[in-house]
Amino acid sequence: MNRIVILLIAGLLGAGCTTSVITHAWKADNPPQKKFENLLVICIGNNNVSLEESMEAHLADDLRIHQINASSAHEVLGPKLFTNLNEKEVLEKIEKSGYDAVLTIVLLDKEKEKYYVPGKVRYSPYIVYHRRFWGYYSTIYERIYEPGYYAEKTNYFWESNLYDMRTKQLIYSVQTKSFDPLSPASVSHEYGKLICQNMIDQHVIR
Image (tube, rainbow, N blue to C red):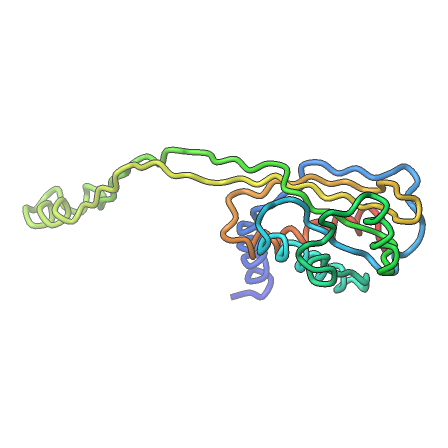
């Protein structure tokens, strides 16, 4: 098979597996023209520690691939994070740890959606069997009916914000929708690559 055709098929198959899309992105009019030296990724308030850790780790890994020093908050600050700390104490803890930017991840909403998959009958074309008894009998006998059924899928709506810790200002925000991801690992992997690439395309990070 032609190499170009193989690459095209591979690209189409890869695109078909994507379950996360960006629904909205915003950046400040005059974001700081600098390279952040140390970025902290924080997943907030999802009540699922393993998912939070996975989301943080994948996004931090993707940022590091692009030569951006990034860390997972759960990994470097522990699972308690900022429990029982006020705003001043939280900001001081981040700054003393040497971070000049914070990138948050929040699960805004999760919705379950039911849909109906109609039944279908699979059989050979009539021309195969209509003249002879055995052809007719064997084809009808092997005909398969697949009944319809209700299925359920879950959609996740995420938001990430990037804050410059020097000015304490929001410089970038993005919302995404994940369509019934296969697993927490798969949505974390897709989300990290998607957000990282969008920030680079928007010239928010470099």
